[in-house]
Image (cartoon, rainbow, N blue to C red; front, side, top):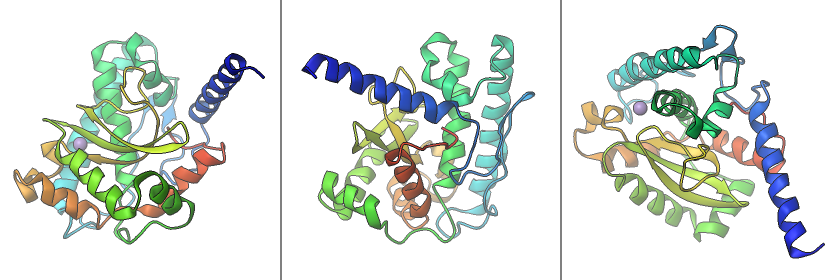
Length: 248
Ligand code: MN
């Protein structure tokens, strides 16, 4: 196979994988709410733990407002925007992968809807600890060590200007840290760094201001105590096995 047809085949393979990963409605990757793409729109699944379950690292009031006000508002506005465009029956991830075709309201509210779904599951009251197995091997391979990775992710999250997110993504079979502004995510066709997200951190002020005020760095450090590495590993291996059927 010459280089050109190899490249073409590889790209088709990636496109096919992404399409099959994100078109399935079988939500088996640890996210609650097995069918959030219903006829009547996009639903907000229950939090996988109580509002106060992440204390002392993330306080109850922040979690309650974040979930019941902010995420709920994105969900409602995404439904309204999607309804206007006749998109209610499409999986949210597919809409976002072609977000450049749609108005800003889809980008902002669809991003806000999906990003928070993932974020809630990235954390757990029994989280923290250390990643292991193939995920840890990949972190060591691509960042030198777990400590290096955490340092680089912390810096990236700290340095997001204004509102946005920090991400650990798989890009061309390598792990990479990236950030996005506002409610953009790495699946969007407008993202500078596209990839499959396996870990994310919301660094909007609404995610930490009540407890940490302007000290975003403290919030990021607290976050490491509740990271659900099991969930991250599940997303990592579902990508590796090309059997991803997660929500997005
Ligand atoms: Mn948020």
